[in-house]
Length: 243
Image (cartoon, rainbow, N blue to C red):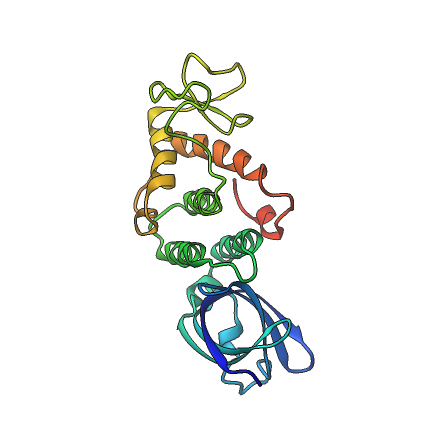
């Protein structure tokens, strides 16, 4: 058996394996997305039973095999058990896990995405923000961390930093009044600022603001359509979420 290592992460998915084991996917700071087996986790008295639930965040002591890790100990810092009493929040949370799993890769450093996921789930249980807004912030910031966010600080056609009141999905960014097209999405000052704030702000400041329904409608359109450019699958939980 190889030496054990410590992985800091969150459980993205879990499924039965064999008679008493579980197979989990962890998003870890050190190794990105990894698969791990937890022996005996489905036994009623297993010390690791609760540690294999979705959303569990903490440190996992494991040894690395040929294709997967085997978890032998876990110190869970947050179970996010509040989510399980609210179906809507559970659906949102599961979507966030799915999106993180889609964009991350095995053995690739994922500290920013893990931190974003953790802070997003914290915002989900806090009741401070509209759940729809949490979703859009998380989607856009995920795109930022994977290097495919839209340009929103200048005109993607001419480079102007003024009059950026239109967004072009085809050109992947904002346009000024001179360069705008007939079918581009109109952006108010508040909607433009919201997009700029999400893209440029550190994670700690993301879930600290609210927007009007009008602004939410604008950023929902931009972020929702833009995300589809980089996602080629249907997420199971999306059909359960309001737009």
